[in-house]
Image (cartoon, rainbow, N blue to C red; front, side, top):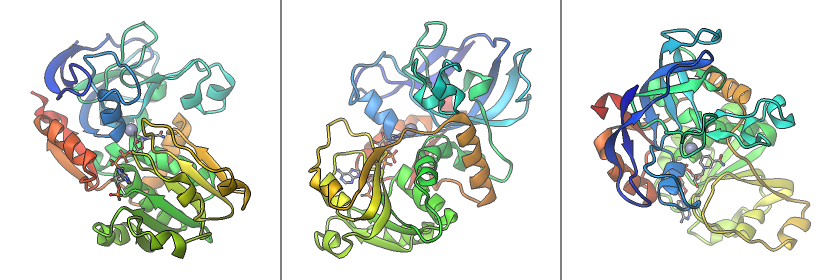
Length: 346
Ligand code: NAP
Ligand code: ZN
């Protein structure tokens, strides 16, 4: 099946319209007519080669929602007409300890990323900036009624990437949680942590988005560009979720943690970060990382968001504005997730 898409022809080059091939629907596969695709900063890191060499031409997009238009003979969990989503992975071995534990994203043989990965048949996976995709039914999520489909798209990556560490590190009543960076991940982290019952603080470069942050559910908002912030908030938080796409001063943020507090990095900058171990040992603090979430946990997140009326705040764009959107994300000028209307893909 030949379908319309947008692809990066080479590292750091603007995306251009193209046509790609999707595989035939196998017995365990689902064919999805994509309605919306979110634009994640990871798409930009990947296209720009921040994380190393990539297979070009590359169709990004791992925040996919749409409607099932065909299912393979062996598929029982999805039906034609269902509202579904696909996130950052489309395959894993299914046999290793991590897969069996529901941590497919940490598959010991390597999960298959939704784009720029090698699929089971040896072909290169191509992502969601496209009109259709064929995916193993085990990696297809149900999007509950009650969440607007376009606003649901960013949940498939930004939503689960923040939900998973918030759950794991116990965000909830009585917990002080800080979110660093109010972008795509950050704004969903604020909504989700607030819905979990935590006391939420936004740490943003400036106070430009303060009104938005408080509307999204934050109790407090501080500018990290003001050095006084780090003195005032020292030892305050139980959990800090860092969503910044660039390097940060890790020691400065560790200093904001209370005894036994944890700083979780979900931001994935190209350059290494360093820290002084005394920032950890002086208050039994932890510095951790987390990558998306497993399939069952992603479904749990979607159901949680539906129950709490959470979707992303989006700017819906036609596909031909994708390069402009990339520029605005890089300039921290996103309010708060760009989503491509795939009906504009021609
Ligand atoms: P985004 O929408 O661009 O948000 C990042 C935010 O970080 C910006 O809005 C900005 O917020 C802040 N920021 C940007 N540059 C900064 C700088 N130089 N110094 C300080 N703050 C800065 O990006 P996103 O889509 O949320 O993704 C964020 C990061 O998470 C990316 O690195 C992405 O690759 C990574 N990611 C990781 C996973 C995972 O599984 N771990 C999953 C998805 C994405 P303020 O203006 O409020 O300061
Ligand atoms: Zn992403």
